[in-house]
Length: 204
Ligand code: ADP
Ligand code: 5GP
Image (cartoon, rainbow, N blue to C red; front, top):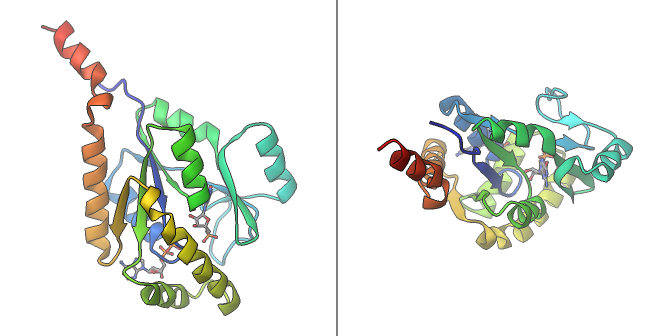
């Protein structure tokens, strides 16, 4: 029996913490999980594919989506705009699929306010030193952008206490397993089991 809305999971953390890596591992091991593809005005990185990694759109298209109320949340981060298109999230959740949003902290705050049943997880790097090393080893941004992202990281880490859960991404597999445990526990919350209680009583 599955007549429940899927979970709405928010994954945030500073750039370089490993959100993308963790998320892709989660998607490999959990086939009930769907990734929300964000829209952004930033330019694609080498290898990034439109409509797969992001919907790469212009600023005017982005503003138009906001004015049509097509964004569930949106934010400006390091001079670019990022937002979650609402349609696919509602559709997947309606089909009982759990949907994961990989978004920065302003968006996380908007989701907590608009969707009180959402579950938010902050991915914490083991240290700022390791965060810097990961960003530099990733090699996808010039040093100037890395410095901006590391500066933003301090502010973002200060927001971690507003999240439902904090998971440290030191060992990747451990981090993924911790998040899987959170998902499993959240599904057993009494508030999400009310239909099941009714079902058991009706089928007595
Ligand atoms: P984010 O999506 O948070 O910006 P990424 O997933 O791109 O971060 O990870 C940043 C870099 O750190 C990548 O090069 C990735 O391979 C590496 N990385 C991610 N998780 C770990 C980990 N647990 N241990 C070591 N390196 C990691
Ligand atoms: P990047 O440019 O590294 O892909 O992403 C930069 C930051 O924007 C990351 O912290 C990422 O989580 C965040 N981000 C990506 N998509 C969205 C979105 O749809 N909304 C918000 N608020 N942040 C997003």
